[in-house]
Image (cartoon, rainbow, N blue to C red; front, side, top):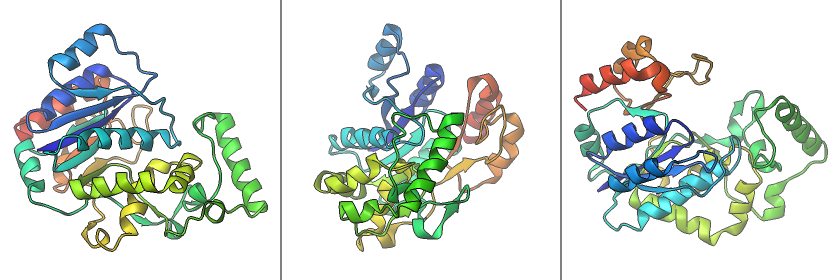
Length: 292
């Protein structure tokens, strides 16, 4: 049995359609952001369809809260001893592969599908990604996406670099820090190891809690530093993402104009982002194409 873990923060109707579709082959676990109001009828629908869901964490972009929600979903999935793999997706995803073929792809497959690179070797937006864990941030309380948040972020980086702050030294972090997309597909033993590691290394958790975009560091750093798991990591994550602005969103909210590019990507299993306002025709065409 395989599980799909969904991080959702809006558009219940889309999340419900996604969950119901994926449930044909997969066990479903959803974390709803606490800011997302769920009506009594929506909760009843989830219960009626035997979909596991929690609503525990106030999720903020750029903070550890996204990783914290993913960790909680993994913990819940691991309570079922029959779960062999987990697939972490967002509530704005949609499958772009036949579900029977997707499920079969992972059966008996112990490879780890996630993107990774050494944080010391990578720059994004002109910043070393290593800085996002080396320095202190508090984006559970400050809106990183606001105008103030952007200036605040630059000020934090400038001030801490000037003062030669090194959180790694203070917390005794000796692992090589790795970074990559938070979306991943993991076999059970990798999930269990990540969860056990987090339980046994409180200072590593403190690093993440005071870091920036920490959801993109924890799985990669834990697994890449272990010689048992590192050779099994493929560096692939089977996601189609259009890194352009479209429908006032970056990355793009996809629509029917993106159909050809999606189906041409033979490696993709999920695509994002989808929004019912713009993506309904595309979703219908993809369902027809992949017989889902």
